[in-house]
Length: 189
Figure 1 (tube, rainbow, N blue to C red):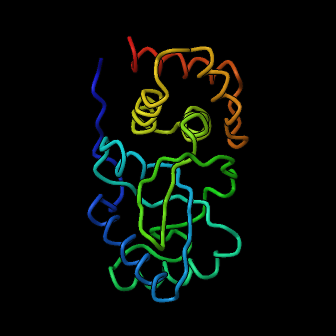
Figure 2: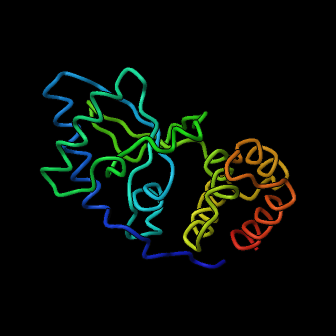
Figure 3: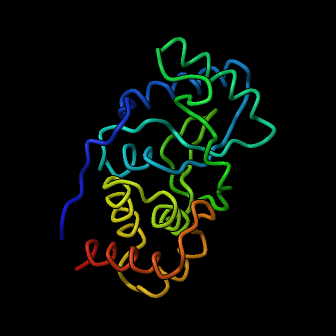
């Protein structure tokens, strides 16, 4: 079995992410607020798998009721810690365009005022094997996600993950299945 590791791209390493999320949680605590976010993307590879050193940003779904609050606090943390801000902030809901549909019980950050969950492994795999398939790091991420799902039932993994493929950019089922087979082979054979 091959070991997949990538330096990643961007400037957000595990210590930087941890420090920024802790500060965000502290700011939420000062306002007596509790927020739960759902993450996708490179942050999972950095924080959970340890298969990347860095990512560009933290892609999350922010509950509608908390969007304005989180946006303001993210800007505060960005200024304090010299992190990306604005439309490409260090923590952003750009992934909301794709509309994450699931939330797993797996946490990448856990604080009384801020919890960051991952989306389900099937949804993350569906996203990686479709529209997010741009670079080697995405393939590496897909291998790690598939290993989390496990090797017991290849057909179930395909059936469950293909439901979540991105609508933009469009990936036809045949291309998706080829990517899935390549990922399965590298993950388990």
